Structure formats: structure tokens, C-alpha cells
Length: 201
Ligand SMILES: C=C(O[C@@H]1C=C(C(=O)O)C=C[C@H]1O)C(=O)O
Image (cartoon, rainbow, N blue to C red):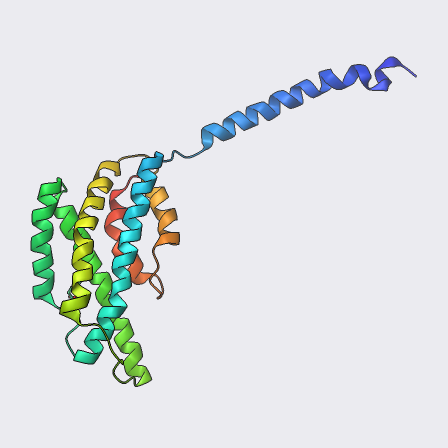
């Protein structure tokens, strides 16, 4: 049998181009990975999303309280009061005034959407009052007020990270995991819109 048929002498030279090609593909693959934010930026984005989720979580409690009391879902004077505080605290934290304002207005919109949808559901179900809903002024709004400065702090981080390549993509991916709204995603999309628009893809 001729020597080249034994395979022994032929295997290595034959495999070399295969290895080279595999190495090239691997290298190209690494270079094609989309850019990701640094770990500390990822932590800050996750924190922002958790805070948005926490705020959205308060909306059903507000809805129960208003269902019993008959108070209007829309409370413009309360929104104005929050926005005044936001303007002052955003200025102190170096957060762009228009960005902070838009962000909070969207959080109000998302909360009202959740409340409206729940009230509609309860009307359709012919629901009576809830057994012992928390008091809006004494118990529920203070929860929202505690979140306000934390959200402003987080907005400061987002402003800094906004131009980091891949930040928007990371935000979008993590939002799917960290922000729930128990509806069809619409209130959640409203709450996230100001960040989605601002963060670089
Ligand atoms: C949450 C409430 O309902 C609405 C939403 C607000 C909010 O998200 O902070 C504020 C006022 C209301 O328009 C509320 O009345 O407190």
C-alpha cells in the first residue's frame, strides 16, 4: 500500500488549513459581538429598571384605594406637586430638567393607564368595594414619594450612560425581564419610552 494511503503522513498537512479557517471564523465572530456597556453601567441600568417596576407596582394599590373612595384617577394638582419637587431635585443632581420632567410625566401616564384598566375590569365584573384598601394620602403616596429621589439619582446615571454604545440594547433586553405590567405591555412601554429614546443602541 503506498505510504500516502496510510493517513499518517497526510493527516497533519491536511488539517492545518482546517484549523486556520476555524481560527479565522472564531476571530471574526469575536469581532462581530455587539458592544456592551461596562459592568457598573449594567448594574445602574438594572437598578433604574427595578425602580420603574417598583413604581408601576404601586398603581394597582392606588386603583384599589380610589375604587373605594371614588376619587378621580387623574390628580393634576398632585402631579404638579411631584413635578415641582422633581425640578428642584433634578437641578441639584445635575439631571437635565426636560429629561426628568418627561420621564416623570410618562410614569404618571403609565400609572393612570393601569388604574383605568383595573377600574374598567372591576366595573365589568360588578365589583364591590375592597375589604381594607390602604389610605391614599397616608400610606400609598408616601411610597411613591420615597421612590422619587431614587429615580432622580438613577436618571443621573442614565444621563451619563446614554451615549455608551450598546446601553440601549442592554436596557431593552433587561426591561423584558425586570419590568412587568400585568397587562399587554402598553403601560410598561409608556414608562420606558423616555429611556428607550435616549439610550444609544
Ligand atoms: C398615583 C396617583 O394617580 C395619578 C398618578 C400619579 C403618579 O403616578 O404619581 C399622580 C397623580 C394621579 O394623576 C395618585 O393619585 O397618587
